[in-house]
Image (cartoon, rainbow, N blue to C red):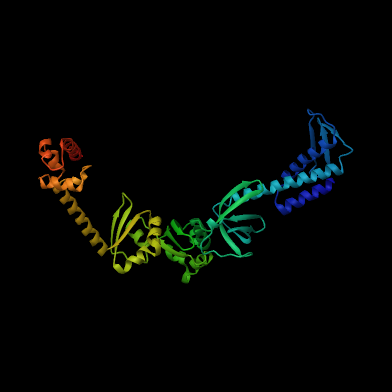
Length: 395
C-alpha cells in the first residue's frame, strides 16, 4: 500500500501540478483519521502518522510512541483513499484559484462547453470552467457548442464547488488587451493607450499616443492595409473601432474624437470641461451619430461634455433667448399680474382693473377704503388683498 500511495502522489504531481509536499501532508492527515478508527485512544492522546518520502513507509505514533495497529489495513486504506481524493480536489481547486487570480485583467482562450439559459460555460483548455454571463456578452456575439472563444477575466470567486471564473467580452479592457496582443508597439510600451470608450458589439473609440515621435501611433495600430485592426474587429464580430490620436490640446483631441465629422467652430471651457461645437448642416447627423453614439463616445473618451449644433440652430437659440428676455422685461414693466393673488377670480380681477388697479403693485399701495369701492370687494377681502400684494412685492 505504501509504495502504491507514493507512486500515485508522484503521478498526480506530474499530471496535475500539485506539489508533492502538499499531497503528503494531505495523506498524513487522512491516515490520522483512519488510524483513530482502528486504535483505541483516549481523547487526550495524540495520534500522528508519518509518510516516508523516500520509500513510502507509513508509521503510526500514539503520544510519540510508534505502534503497529493490526487492523490498520483495508478499512484504513479505504478511509485514507476517500480523504486523499477530497484533499487532492481541494488542492486542485486552490491551484486553479491561484492560477486564475493572477490572470484577472488578462484575456484567456477556451471553447464553448455548454449553455445555461443565456449564459455560456467556457472550457478553459481543460484546466477550469469559465462563466460568461449574458450581461457580459456583446450584442453581436453568436456562439455554438465547441466554438473557440476569447474573453477577459473579470473576477475570480471562491465557491464551495470550486473557483468561479467570471468572464467578459463587453468590458472596455477586452479591447485594450486585444490591442496589446495584436500591436507590438503597445505591448512594448512605445505606443500608449490613453483612453477607451466602448458601446460593446457596436463601436469603440480608442485614444493612442506615441512616446517616440518617429512612430505614428495610429498607423502602428491600423497596420499594413489595416491588417492589425482587422484581426481585432474580427474577434469582436465586426464591432467598429475608431483609432484617435490623443493630444493634450483639447481642440485637437475633441476634433479627432468626433471624426469623421468636420468641425466648423469650437468653444472650449477647460474649467468646466465643456465644449460647444458648431458644424455645417450636412455634418450634424455624422457628428452626433446613430442614436447619439458618436458624440456620446467622444464625450466619454475625452472627458468633455460636448454640445453640437449647426449655425442655424445657434441662430434659433439666440432668437429664442432674445424673445424670452423681452417677455421677462415686459412682465417686469407691467408688474406682477393680479392672477398671482389667491382668491382673485377672473371677474374680480376684471373689476379691479376697470377701477384702475392694473397690477399687484397698485393694490399693495392702495388703502382698504379705495379697494372697497370696487364692485364685489368688502372690507375683509380688501385687507386680505393688500396683505398678500405686499408679500408678493417683497419677494
